[in-house]
Image (cartoon, rainbow, N blue to C red; front, side, top):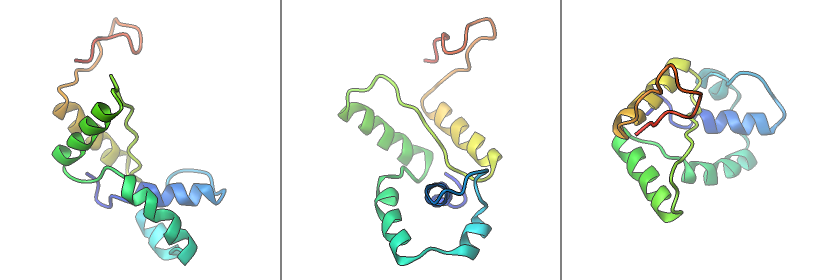
Length: 113
């Protein structure tokens, strides 16, 4: 659902190196590259990532929720561009028919279904 689906996974790996701060851009990540050991660390992260169309990601989320009997899930989109993150969340909210909480409800208290 983002221009580069593994931007966030690569940024996570960089954070594991102790480099904290904003997510790095895909161009910065590409310039630096990764060692063979780092590539090996990325493989399991890539395998677990939910990447694809909104329908593909939603199907994976529904399966995860069903498999673990979850009533709700938390989504974290690791994309460098904030607009891409917001779009990702908006697409999923639409797919799950979620509604924004009313302005008079305490945070987290509104019925989102």
